[in-house]
Image (cartoon, rainbow, N blue to C red):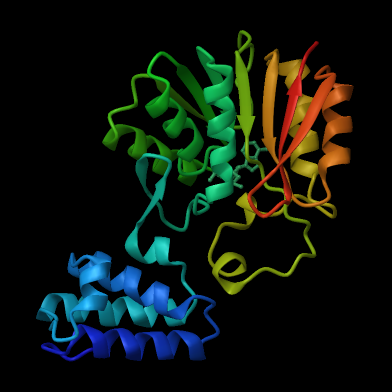
Length: 278
Ligand SMILES: C[S@@+](CC[C@H](N)C(=O)[O-])C[C@H]1O[C@@H](n2cnc3c(N)ncnc32)[C@H](O)[C@@H]1O
């Protein structure tokens, strides 16, 4: 419990110690981000001003956030939001917390300059809404099998003023759809047996994570359903996991994207699979 009138420096030090004891990887950073967001005080000021004291409301909110974080709840769920590209998304346990490497799918859209995009597995709406934000002439259809995820994504679209150009549907593929210029998907690709940090394994939705024994079952089943649903595009971008490049490239070639390319993320892990029809 952080006492009202406590110094920010003491509150941060105590929280960072508790986080480290709970096994959190970035204890000091998490404490600073939480306190800065909840107090409205800039992180640099929190660090620089050792005499800064906390208002009662900020002290209470920070105590509650520390209690939640010790249980390994992700910082984004505690704060209820996450930045992605140039937009801020509301997030909760119904959706995966958007990851920085997923921005590679948005970068692909900027390269292709599509007028129409299908995003499959939209979660919080991160990819669809970032594309809509950055490509003002583009219309997007975004799907997810989770009702809860579509509720979160639609609320984000509304709040960001993007709902006129982004249409959401519960399910996997739009039926009888005309072709799109680009298909994007970050589908679940974690192998079922993979151990995950508590922040992921205990808090994020399992249907957003796991993709069968080798992680590629959901990707395979979505690709296999495209022909029957009439879903086509000259370019497709799929987020993939380590070691999945060759398998997913073969799946793409089998359904008509004959040119494939794997791009690594900043950690050098194969992350973005691009397929093109020739
Ligand atoms: C890895 S999360 C990605 C969420 C979001 N696009 C992002 O990048 O942050 C995968 C999402 O796909 C959804 N999903 C799982 N299987 C699906 C399927 N067969 N068709 C459509 N969406 C699916 C999950 O509900 C989840 O929201």
